[in-house]
Length: 150
Image (cartoon, rainbow, N blue to C red; front, side, top):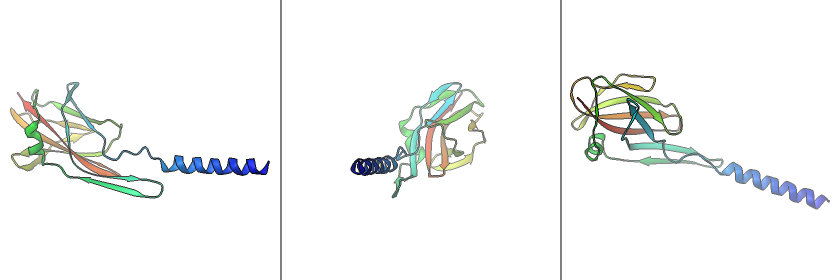
């Protein structure tokens, strides 16, 4: 009878260790979902740093990508109305700290107004490359999308 108790205790300890070591933590930041007038906008993930914490170890991934103006070269601009608003969400439901910037040729330009994950887009006609910087407790990521205001 004692042997069964010991085997049961060892089995339970083993299960606890296995369950504790397996982690559902993602190894990269979530995907950004950008909507303008309830339409999804093509968004590309750029450079990011992401840390996953395990029971016995931590892992940090640094992924380098092209600058937003270079990423935008392969993206199709979404035509939007003047002074539209872009709603930003993430596929994991998280609410990171956000900043949004216009890219002017090969450099980061002005910061766009952002309130409660809503970006007020430019009112002047033209094509715009927009970078979103998202910051979580375990990392950060850049996202790019392209619009054309008409």
